[in-house]
Length: 504
Image (tube, rainbow, N blue to C red; front, top):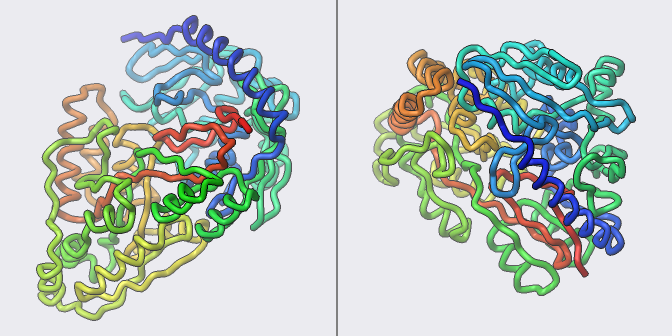
């Protein structure tokens, strides 16, 4: 089977967009030279292969180009790769651009692409993204601007996963090492790394030699501001141009102020509660069921999230391939939850509940109270994002009893959710179940869509019955923005500075 992406249309569209956006960029740059963005936390890493969390991604995605990307409509389009051919079920050949240079002036070649893929799939490297790429067995530069990628069997979501693969310069990484590269990353993207004041901010400067659409701002500063109210206050005072992770109450405050606006979009991100079946008392299914029945999803969505979000019964949204109709979960029933906790003999037992300031603590506190009302004592342990990620990716027996999370694979395929959170080979998983491993492997090793859907249906039914996870809601993300910022948020939560503009 051979499928070739047509380069002609993509280049024509790219030229038209470039002409239009260049004019916007020139106008915007004269209006505003510095864009200030308030994040929740500072990036845990600027090496794009070392981390996968929103505050890191917001920053490093502007420093690096990826092999392919998604446009604002969610379609996969060229970036470093101009076209690709699926020469067999297990082999892709990519043609890459011949006009891209890294920020140090060196040309980006097929060797850099092959190096980047090889780096992220090396288990010894320890990328937290490994589970999304471990079907790739090799990447080889088969020409100066050609890369041949081979997979272990058919891999139906390869392109969707490659949307997240950033290209790093082989010569820089090999010369300075991983730690130094993280401290001062070099990419080929529309913005260059300028400086990183740890715990304070990261500053990027526009790459005026960028091959694609230039950024409209001469510089951008990403600041760590953990408190959401402070992020909004900064926005209203004109100290910030864009603030992330705003809740519905603060969104209403912003809209009422007249000095800024709220921007929102329903994403493919899933809010969920992770339970650790490796640790007692959660090794008892009755206790896990009780936790599920103690949680009022509708109450969280309507009472806390302001109705922006949608309750979920499975670890998939309607925008994912692998979403299946008819999945039924344990109904909200606090009295039944109490009875199960009593029956299991664990009433009053304390269990840790891991979270980070990145998450909406109103939800965390509500869940903790609901679980505690059922008879367990959910003790919230709030740590910075880097510590939280380290804990939830540790050995299964050492992972927290409970952990709140909001997961997005940015791939619109449930493989990027279920495999990462449930397969025993994943650092994110605390589950060990051969049947589930087999179903997840089957689903990512066939191009038969019906077979994939059947496997995912069985996995979703297992989650509903055995409760290693409690799906909570399809998350809407709300940003606060200065009135002069023109930007449309997307479902994959990317923050591309060169897709923004400014108008006074």
